[in-house]
Structure formats: structure tokens, C-alpha cells
Image 1: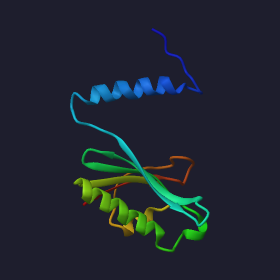
Image 2: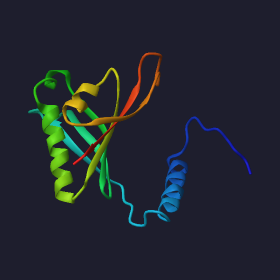
Image 3: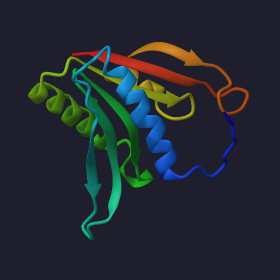
Image 4: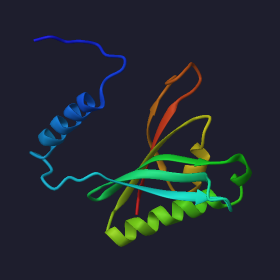
Length: 138
């Protein structure tokens, strides 16, 4: 057996680990799926100027990225995206949403939308910046 560090792993190597973990997980959650989704905000030229991406896992949604161009911030667009995620959850009978953010990003935004902090990784990137984990039950 050999353990080798790769700073540029091949996608097929990463996929082998992902598939192996998925196979193990199926012993405990046989029907597990991970369907990705995106809500895209486009300008009049059709360019993406914001949006939200995530994964649907059986009875939960994991928000992965939420970003808006500076010109769109504080305009209610982020709240519209969050409302659409909740509509998706209702349509699919999904009971909870998880998301993580950094202290310099949007913790108050998520709290305003009913998300509760369930964990924190202090000094995650550099001293003084925490990674915060949130959860919302629908």
C-alpha cells in the first residue's frame, strides 16, 4: 500500500473517493441522492450577476454558494432567492435547509431568514474569521 499526496488530483481519483464514500453511506441510507440545483440571476444581456447553488439530499437541502453582484445587494434579491429555495423544498417535501458562511459574509442575512447557528469553526481562514454553520427547519 502507498499513500501519496497530490496537490493536483485527477477528477477520476476524486470521483473514486466520492463513489466509495457513497457506497458506504448506502448501507445506512439506501435511497441517498445528491441532485444539484441553481437559481441564476441574469442581467438584460443574459450574463449571470448572481445566484444560489446547492444540493438536494433526500429530505434536506444544502446551500453551497450564494452570491450577488454588488449592485444587486440590499435590493431584496437575496431574499427572493431564499424564498425560491423554500418553495423548492415545499414542492419536494424537504424538511430542512443547511448553509455555512463566514463572519465577513452574511451571518445576519441568514439569521434574518430564520436560520439558527449550529456550529462555528473559529479562526478558519485567518485569525478573526470564523466559519459558521446554519440550519433551518421548515
